[in-house]
Length: 394
Image (cartoon, rainbow, N blue to C red; front, side, top):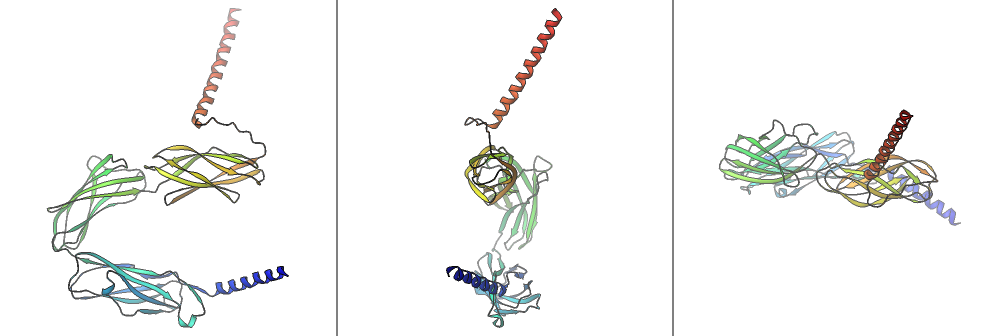
């Protein structure tokens, strides 16, 4: 009786799930273009901007528009609800910015959020969506000379000269005749790598300009992947500014150079050893797991110094697994990055291991083996020489 009730319950759940699945309208692809716009402040004026709702999945959707941010009181919408039909590839709408008589100098940000709503004709359907938004920026000039200075370093592959730029955003009410900078680059240990000079440029008011900083001593600047520090000593006309900033090239990488353990014993907890290398210029804290045959075994957290190679030990329980060939995956996690590498291993019944003494690295064992081979070769040569010498005497 209980089995019949259970079977009916499962069948009912499957039917309901099927009905729900077929009634969902997914409108996550509803977008907006352009996604941002920057305008200059003009006292007591209205600025009209046009945007488009992108209906890539061709759904019937009502888009509700809402202003947000510090500009929300200045944002006026011609339509607060925009009806988007399935036949509409894109649907335009207008945003009006009504500026007051004055605003604080600087860059003010706000925007409009676009929230999809299912139409009345399809209220019996379930809706899944992701709200989209557009960003509005208003530039209000300072009453005198004022420039926002930014260091921009383009991320390029190793072996390619590093492009470094100093950007000057003239947010003042006056033109700037001369703007330039000297850039000092440091490694993570605050050791000076190089000094760069950015040639002088001029900027009209309310304009953006940039100048490329180049090495004072080298034709081209090359850096390896890693984390770096920079000090920008900039100036524009009679104003001097210092900016301390950081940047990275590439992404951190922890490589598994070798899986030392290739053979595992059946029905036991096996020690898994591999060589990990930190291909980055700062210390990384690493955690991870070993995966094989659908099983996951966490490994202890370990640290790798910059450019360090270290032998790492993990463990894997093969209880219940049959002897044979398997794929073993080692996943390493450091910060927001994850790296997985897969190796072929074998589980055997009779595993004979040569246990290492604690603290002796793999290199020491290799050297010992090489030394033994050399001793054997020398011994053979000496024996042959003695035999030859004896034969001559006879």
